[in-house]
Figure 1 (cartoon, rainbow, N blue to C red):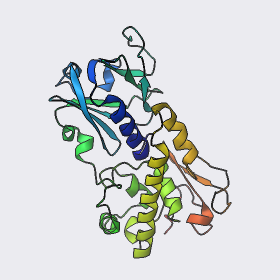
Figure 2: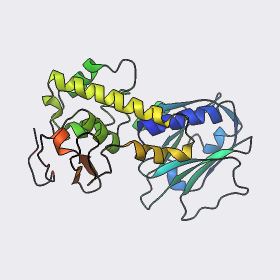
Figure 3: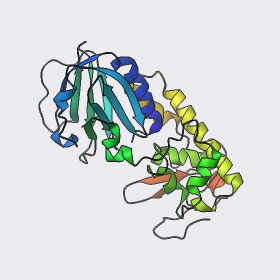
Figure 4: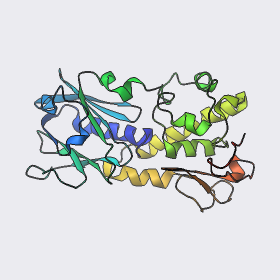
Length: 287
């Protein structure tokens, strides 16, 4: 799933390639991708793009005196830039193409989604805060005012695992499964630790790891073409998705805890004092 760093890089990319350009056609190919009906997608046509914003994992393409095209790529969605776009009108079918946006220049982008679980979402709205997912977002962890005190205040009453707290978009916007693993590894913290139990020293470590991990990931992705962002994300991860490999810090074997629809990875030496985490469904939480 694209998370804050990849979506921020897409925002940079689209800012460069869309701003000032006129949208001439918006073609929904998979009708299920549209989550709003008024304004219609055609309301974007003939309007120039004025800015591209990011809200957590949401992308917002704003048009002059017109609606916003807001997108959430979900788990398997992606944005594919094409210059030029293929000729002809794409036909609905079983392929990954969900929506196409064409510009006056002949270039444009496709929103695609692999797999059978279609969760990619597109909203055409007069204000991005009308999108429910945007309206309930917590603070952006890269905002200037997201300091250690603010993180401490957010976690103080969270009687759940710190891994789950970091992934809660209504608590902190933009962090998903992969970067929560990376942040907790950098912070030398068990993913099962209760968020409310963090000491001041642990909160300091977590805040530093959070800001550093996300900032470095954004910088690695900055300036890359949209098609290269997935590979860059994978290459930059130190523990997530690397079960069985040696930890790049201590050399211990990276371990995994599996859930019904996801998994987490961690280093026992760096994060849990050498203890192995059992499946959450079968064990008590590690403190």
